Image (cartoon, rainbow, N blue to C red; front, side, top):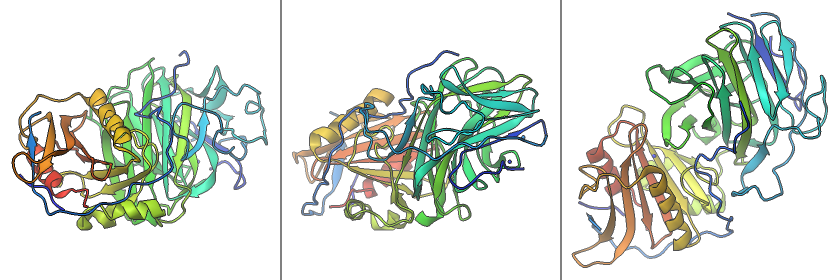
Length: 440
């Protein structure tokens, strides 16, 4: 269907935690939201319906020799009610270590991040946080936590409080020597990076003039989603707070999948420290790109030209509410004309879909009220066929921190779809919306 008019690496065993620290070469807050919903999970997928051949219109309605300690295997996903959909949760860690099991010099109990000391700095559990303390500008360190599965797709969300100038972030890791992820800086920069563990993070793609809001002494919530080569290529997306996607990265080399989550800090000033308070990891628990039956069903509704660019996403989708199934597609590279990201989220009911859509309007507003999304931001109903045809969904086209996004519902399929154009061209993204389905 188309419509007419989104490091030396510390020695450790495979199932041990790890920390790496190098010399030069705040109060607790709530868990990061990043769009996580409090809606209860559901258990089935929507069925497709028959297809007309419609047209549509929108109507206004870091080098000293390191030392380290080994931390242990990861605990399974939590069984209690954490207030959001837990089906894809690998761990939900408030880093308070209430039993004191993670603060010993050597520990063998599950669920701990690596800790250690070197001339360059230290990592330790302290005050309800994983605390990174450096002693000179240029020092860097990382710590990781094993998860209980191998995942073609992983998302890590965390909340950081820096004390002075530096950069920090989250990494998806395959073993102890293959880490990829994204960092943000107190100077407002972002960078996609990789490290083998024994060298400071190497920049893959960066924007030093991004203008991010990463205030010293305040909490910054961020997330990184990684899809390994098993999905067809290495894909990473950086999210910050409630800004929507900030940047994406795609490459043909990297790990196939991920079995560890990691966090990294690097000083840009003497005495830099940063606390990680709260960390949540989500994973597909699928080592290859084989879609679940529900994912295969949802893929049918993705335009054929985009299907090879898709991987099974994670629940809940950021800014999308609790969905039954999610597909994320990197349909273009940054700088190309039109949207770079498309996302399709299937819901059990129109009510669940509409609640997720409303969440988007709560985050991003409803725009300037321009009559057509081809011309600018607004929120509209749309229909297929001629004048007087019934409305089949709502369309939100709106600015986000970087670029623009289109979110739209389809009540015939209970699918909420999203397009993100990081360059912010409403006309080109509108053309993608016209062709973007979801197909019946």
